[in-house]
Image (cartoon, rainbow, N blue to C red):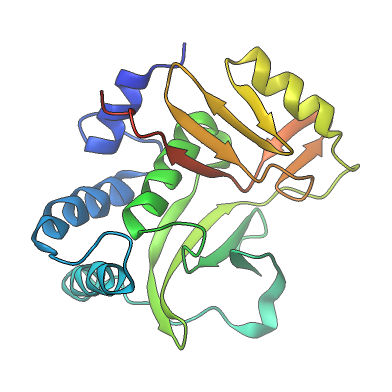
Length: 210
């Protein structure tokens, strides 16, 4: 049974998250520290100060990593790049959180994803810096590409689990108060007849904490 209360506790770090302990720790730290930020939350300066908080955390906790080796590059989308892993059952993904107004929203997305899809959970490995700014590096189980996903099956699955279709490939859950977007056939694969949600874009609705 999906529960907004349970998801609230996971994001607050009050309940365990599958593969997400370090994500919870970073999310809670960022939420505390960013209260001192004076900039407008929608401004570029706000995001810069968020990244400074995360950079200090990474430095203190030994979470700075080198960028993945380009020889293991597999592919990329609008939001991330994908690399092979020494264990072929996993892939490495790098993300600048470009789909999110702030880094806290991106980290919340990882926790929500792991709540819904623990078999495809993200593990946060660390951070790196590029010319584009701060970048997170995560690990996720690899899913072999199968037949093209029928998006009608995606809609039927989500509706059966309480989501409401908004438009195109976007949904929301009126009880849990979350939004799920960008579910095209490269973000949801099909393996042996099962839908595999490998890339999700979750947002909290404004009244999520009510």
